Amino acid sequence: MRKGAKRKTRETKSSSSSQENHEETIKATSRAKRVKASKPETEPEYFEDKRNLEDLWKEVFPVGTEWDQLDSVYQFNWNFKNLEDEFEKEKGKLRGKKVYLFGCTEPQLVHFKGESKVVCIPVVVAVVSPFPPSDKIGINSVQREAEEIVPMKQMKMDWVPYIPLEDRDSQVDRLKSQIFILRCTQRRTALKHLKIDRLKKYEYCLPYFYQPLKEDELEQSTEVQIIFPAEPKPVFCEFDWELDELEEFTDNLIKEEELSEDQKDAFKDFVKEKIREAKKANREAKEARKKALQEMSQETKTAYENMSFYKFYPVSDKDSPDAPDVSKVQSPYINRYYGKAKEVLPPICEKDANLLFRKI
Image (cartoon, rainbow, N blue to C red; front, side, top):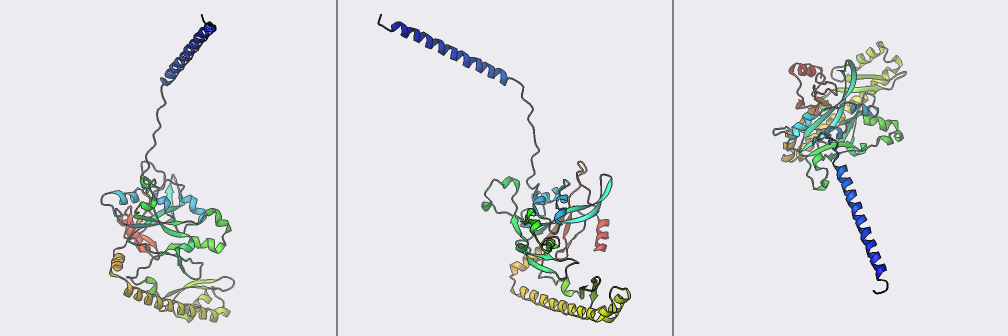
């Protein structure tokens, strides 16, 4: 036998034994895994699929809502399935149309879970139009001396496309969106750095709309809002230059101790100036409307004629009452620029509608 042959044989046997041990280990591990895998698994957890337009109402900025009230708008699980249905059902009023949506809130006293309380009810207004209804925002309140009409972008607002849930994995630039929402990019964390006047402007904002085919009610009005800076407190009143006589009107304010005798002449001059401003504004508005109509294409005129406004309130779900029932506090009125909606959804019952129309 050649030298070293025995050692080689021993090494071969040792190697073979090691291989057998390794294989046994693998088999044991495999058996352990099979035993472990045979244990019963826990029941899978199922989640209800989100509706395609479920968050649409939340994405629409509630214009004119006070910043400190904004969170309270979302404290309830409001249901806007009625809005979704009008986009999705076969004969929906908004299906297949280009629609612009803006939001607002209406504080109303409602009954919920055994108590009555004031709630900021979210409302969504849908404007069916081939182009944006306006690129401006109106800023007005009783406390402000004059109304302002400013570009939306000045208040960090703009119309942006809404992307339904099923399309959010697609490239936005490839989508031909038919739904546009009014959004505000003002960050709430930066509010503390804004001046009070700038901050308050957001609370007095109203979506602006001008209908050139109809004479504005403000053009026909003969009333002026008066905020006279008197001492010790300003005088707030309305003066109608066709129905009121200035001398008599002023004397009545003095009798009611709203105005002092020594401020009489200053007040009368102030009212006369406001009347001149209002008449000038009316003339300019009529001239602007006349010019706009002359320059307007027939296509644009047709678009204005067919423009429709729909107002949506949350629907009440009796099976899961997570939010107050607002069916008794609905109104067709949108704001001073848009006037009344063509239709309110869910529909107002005839009795409630008659009461509301008498109030407006």
